[in-house]
Each structure stands twice: as C-alpha cells, then as structure tokens.
Length: 115
Image (cartoon, rainbow, N blue to C red):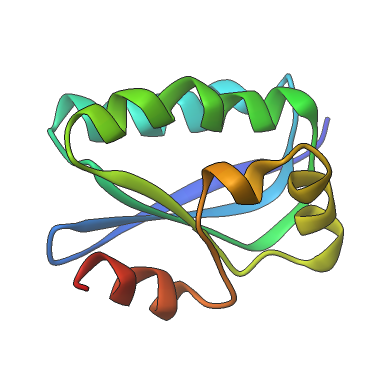
C-alpha cells in the first residue's frame, strides 16, 4: 500500500499541513481528518505544503474542494505551496489555480496571510 502522512505545525494563527507520499482514495481520509481537526478548532488560515508529495489522484484533489468553502465562509483560506511540476500540472489541468493561490514556497504562502 502507498505510504502517506501529514504533519502539522503552527506559525502564529496559521496552520501548515505538510503532505508526504501518495494522496489517493485510500489515503485521502488522513487529510480529511486533518482538515476536520483544524476546522473544529476554528483554525481557518491553512497552508498546505506539497514539497514531499509524490502523487495526487482525483480523490486527493477532492479533499481540497470539500473544505475550501467552509474555510472561506469563516474568513480563512487554504493556500498551496511547494508543488513539484508533476503535481502542479494535475492541479493546473483541473483549473485549480483559478480557485486557489499556489506559491513556490511555504514562506510565500504564509506571508500572503499577513498582507
């Protein structure tokens, strides 16, 4: 089975989820649980760091669509950072850059919350 895990770190009022491995239908619930945990704790400023993500499927992409509305309703956002070209191309193909801000680095995404 493909490996996938997340780590969470806080920087002020911003939550950073680091993804590692393969995000697909089997592993998507791990990320869903992380988003639910943040939302339940009223944490709506979220940066997702893709630096160590090797693969994402449509089920993985669906996780982001499932939570963006709830986060934005609460004056927050989900910003995406550090994608490999391979992962970015999948997001781009499905029009995600129109819906999400995608940054080269985690630091850029974090800075955007304070503008």
